[in-house]
Length: 264
Image (tube, rainbow, N blue to C red; front, side, top):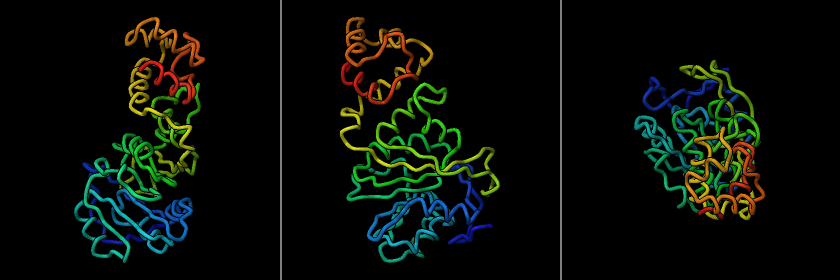
């Protein structure tokens, strides 16, 4: 079943990575995963013609914010805004997530070319993140959901899992979009974990992940000795309970947290 657009759709712009969702059943499933309650604040990234927005409008929210980079769609949504709705014309990559007040449910069909860095920022910078439901490229979803020790496990896996519990929603085939992408998409649900389980020094963790996963097939001791002294490396690995011969993809998020704090 094809979803009805809230506004008149223009041709998708390749420069913005636009693939408009057209399947109403998929839109309804995404809206249901939000589990919106009375008084919630909801933010949708890249609403485009508004297939998902149309499902969000009747939900019991207190505030609904849309971030749209395409000026045409931003203007149309602003024209049709309800009381309590706000439309931001701009790039979600530049949004000040750390300044958002209160609890937020964040959702969107994220452009493939910015999905990873955008989620990286959202989970780590949004102080009141309550829940996130994103549709992203299936390959990226698999990386986020990957357990330690698997071939898909990497820096993005560790980072997202350092802030959220990630759960699989469902697969969305290319036929549900216009124009259809060349790969499957997947809906995932992110639920924030307790603050005490998150990294104390995010900048340190980010730096360590970049160092380690640039050479993921090498042993940790060999990777880290290029950046830190041998004594510092061996001491940090021992205190973190990590074997020097382990490879980055075998470490759990909390072990990376400990190493980051010890090495920097």
